[in-house]
Image (tube, rainbow, N blue to C red; front, side, top):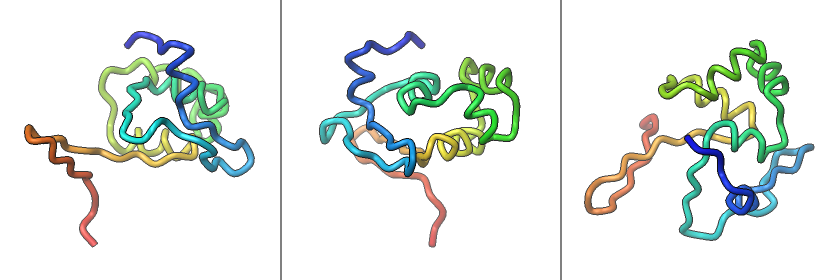
Length: 104
């Protein structure tokens, strides 16, 4: 995946480093497509920061960010370490969007 432009990085929600709350986000209805690395960088985190949060080493975070295929459980842990949630959305031909989740 190619590296995002500086303009697209400016549209990523900024995270407050103390509370990880979103201060602003992308324009409504807009979807950003970013790599794990770009999301980590936009959150102001290093691979070492993520490694500590994931209880692994920096080299494993590097491998994860370069991987073409990752387990959903791994992506959820990565998102949590960034202060985010991971959602899986199925998009059907007619534009219907269904978010994968546990039935309550």
